[in-house]
Image (tube, rainbow, N blue to C red):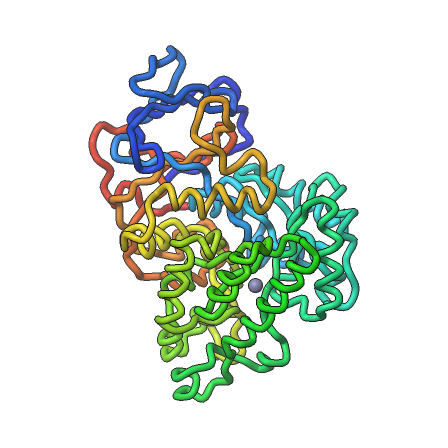
Length: 454
Ligand SMILES: [Zn+2]
């Protein structure tokens, strides 16, 4: 897989994508020029200067938008940088990511969010939208300067203390009220701190057998229940990060039926993996919120399919190897996800018949762009729209190899799994940030040719 310098002057290059299946349905050509999709239709005339891409058998989708990425910069460049994280995002089919605020320093001022915004623009692989912290230093004691971050050049609209829960109900209420003025959203990491002190994994049969301190479902559900009531009371927008239990899905369904302005997210790993994996004591499976039971996985898939859960967010959380390759109790929590998200969602939702590619576009691009107020993303594949487009080969299969990823993190829980789906091209604002060389060959792409090489 080739990645191309996105900062090279793309200028005059015109791309004609031939015979792509638009959202998995009708086949059409797409003409990309000057950062825009300029025409969509059958058998378009090829301009003389156009580079032609044969996309027969490939699906054209809007570039994916992640509402939940940890880019680690500033401060933890040993784990990830904006450059490596956004390159991983492009390879995974993303054209925008929201960078979570738990960097060092914390993104709790206009200065820090502008710094992250500038780093994103400089690397140029995707649109980087900084998330602002809700409280100063993620300490949960004092509101951060939400208004100044909203007014800054970074135009922050999503605020989160992710990694920590805004557990003080008064602060949560004030934050919800504050962001209403500019239609911002509070993205909550729902985890009641007292109920999860010392917790190491999901509380259930497996934790009982292993003797590890459990993390009860009620610790997540009680915060979500409180927060949807606060959102109802304030009339503000609440987003629930990484929903992981069946009970959480039920509470969100209840709230939506009552018109509460709540949206919710599920991670790829919670759609596929269960706490049975913890029996291996391999810290690659240690994550917050923890992997749950098969019944929870089933409820999350149903919730995503029926719209109770609005989007997929990766919670891409790279860690240096020394923080993961150690004893379970000492290991850091988190998993990488940008370069495997499409494959896991195809495997769990599309190949199971629970969702089609149009639904995939809705939960990975259209709705996250709306929640995060990224106006140029998640748009229809139509003439006049910004050219944020990916080409996906749904028939390709690959074995996940973290050593071949662009992310600095090697902590993929999917390592060694054979998964479907391959991103063969990513166009960000008309620039091909990823373009598989095999696309220009006249024969079908084999798995070898399209190896997942960063
Ligand atoms: Zn979180």
